[in-house]
Image (cartoon, rainbow, N blue to C red; front, side, top):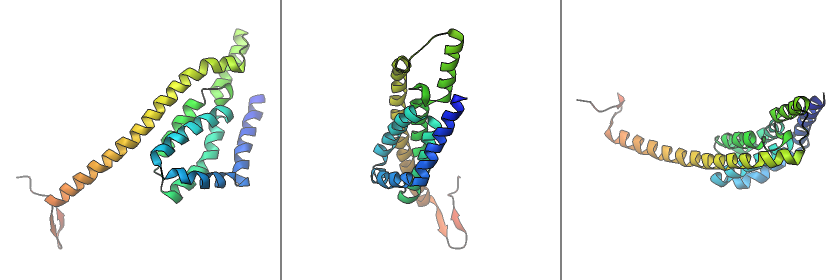
Length: 181
């Protein structure tokens, strides 16, 4: 029953942040960082991870959805920002007991069946190193996705330019590909 009340409180918190207008204030302030897209992706990954460790993955992402949606629509941030948020929420949730529902369930089962008492900081001591390693890997992955996407766009543009040079343009027929003979 306690976990249900906990999750209800988390959803109420995220709804309150949206209703009060804090989400709008945050999106306006974060829009200055959105122009530096590589940094913005890494920043959002780590902020999401930290907030997820404190508040939980579901409520953190629920608060971030309207903020990021506003930034992507108003300021042209690419949609791959959602990958950074997903990585941050997934790995950040494993840092603390309250960060993810599976941590709470596993913690409760360990106390019930193994009769072992683990404090919050003992859990943190064992969960923080692998989570940090995973977040560093996620940071590298997120930055590489940006680099690969830019390279792919450059290659597609070059291919398109080369293809257009080899095509025959005609007002009646349109674009024809060169013959393969």
